[in-house]
Image (cartoon, rainbow, N blue to C red; front, side, top):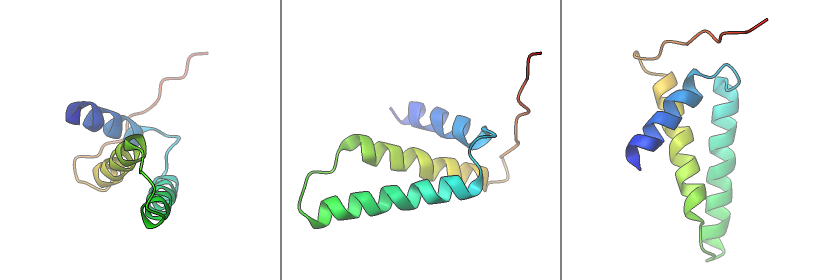
Length: 76
């Protein structure tokens, strides 16, 4: 499972569709949703926790020295 999360995170971090702001905003929205569920003593779906982990790792990877954007190949 951890390898899958790492693989998905790196793919998202390298995507031209996910800029730094979108990743930050998504993480904040997930944090808010998880907080509201926990505060209401409602169960937090594991998929939300998993998604938050993926986005957090994507942000960390994008901010790391190892990050190198991959050019997308456009077919004509």
